[in-house]
Amino acid sequence: MNTTPRGQRLHIAIFGRRNAGKSSLINALTNQDVAIVSDVPGTTTDPVYKSMEILPLGPVVIIDTAGIDDTGELGELRVRKTMDVFKKADLALLVVDPGQGKDHLEYERGVVARARNENVNVIGVINKADIYGREGHDAGAWSSELGIPCVIVSALKREGIEELKRLIVQSAPKEWTAPTIVGDLIAPGDFVVLVIPIDKAAPKGRLILPQQQVIRDVIESDAVAVMAKERELRHVIENLTRKPRLVITDSSVFLKAAADTPPDVLFTSFSVLFARYKGDLAALVAGVKAVEDLKPGDRVLIAEACTHHAVEDDIGRVKIPRWLRQAAGGEITFDVVSGGNMLPDNLSDYKLVVHCGACMLNRKEMLSRIMQAQEAGVPIVNYGVLMAHIHGVLRRALSPFPAALAALGSEEDEDEAMELELLKRAGGWLAS
Ligand code: SF4
Image (cartoon, rainbow, N blue to C red; front, side, top):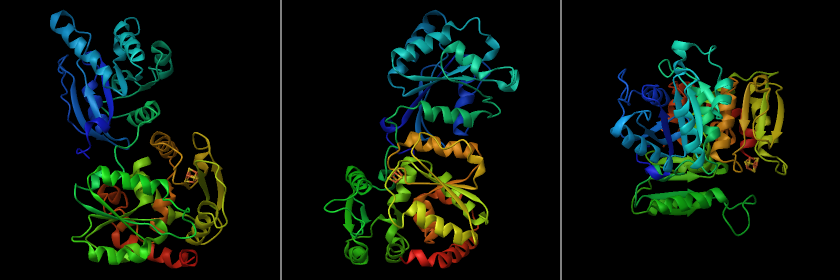
């Protein structure tokens, strides 16, 4: 992920008085110990840019700024350099040590005002809950005081960090998206074979948007996109001058495409690629494990991001419910929600949320929904990952994504046996 160009990453600037805990916060967000942490005020001098991965946000650039309440000549220079950071930031975190009290917030108000001028959203991170306690520091009161959303955290103990990440997603710019669909998986000159069935479901005379986007991404990465229907896949691979780096298939021909792709070639589907591009692939893969635990009488929520016209044998309303009932060995209650900004409030009533492919949502919206389910303690999976699981090819379809593969756990044999069993049970509709 660190090969992602800096210009395509979300830039998060961290502001705060000296020793408010900025470096500890970076460590907590990235779950590493990368920033310099010191009890001596002013350890950080010039703004430092660090390319990092924050799960589930993906690749970001953290801009670690100097404490800007410095005085004196050197202080003024640092203040100017720090304020220049607003020109590059997509989002700012203002770290506050509540021990300073609310009487002297000139510096904090200055940061908020400057951010407003530059059109940058700011989140107040009220730190050091380990010293002052979460209860004693009301996020709402700090929000009113500073006029920005605030969250109480202990960077040192890494508490309140998930809530902060949710606020980051909500406050990120609308156009924020993952930097690439497939570009980080391939190198210039690689061959990428796209398996595109041309059947009754395919629109006349054109490719669908996800296929167009992947082709564009492959070409932009200076690689070579080769397209074929599932019947021609084997022939195409055999006749390329060298093995393709990656085969990407439509989910409807998973089994045939997997069978015709050599085992040493990376293999995935458009829907798995978009699960990663639009959301958090590892979280959705972890969610699929809940299918094993479904029992008769459970409730499952089918979440569709838009009000589309349901077709006969609709994937979300007919096929997936039919298959999940088979998997559970009895009746399951399905509720369907369509559209809306967020998932319903009663999420904890459900054993599983099955989300659509989210083609009408941006990454920010889909990540918010995933985090909402996680906060309610309900596993969430999407159609693409569930389809790969049903077809018994999920491990194969995750071959390019080791982190997501790890989310499936290490009981490989057990999982594969279960997938085969589920495949047998689902055979009725898979064949259709
Ligand atoms: S996958 Fe796209 S078209 Fe289908 S319900 Fe979701 S947002 Fe709507």
